[in-house]
Image (cartoon, rainbow, N blue to C red; front, side, top):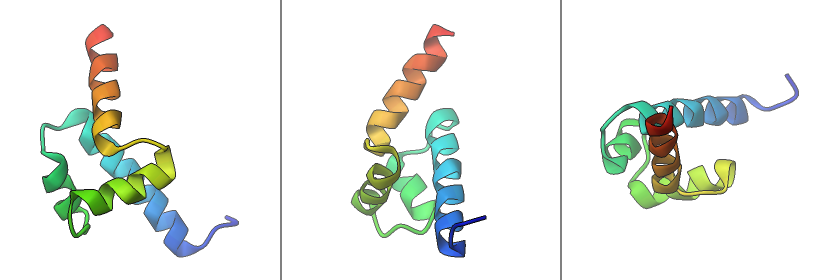
Length: 69
């Protein structure tokens, strides 16, 4: 696949987190704990590394997209 196992798992986990942010009403703090992050800021640090935005900004964009459909 051309990537390490850790990188693959991290990318897969970020996809699951995106799904939770888009389709659930769980708080970002709860999502962070559910996926093994120490707190919301730790999740945001990693999330920004992958998607260049915070989890909150991502959620707001996706919620707005869903409302316009």
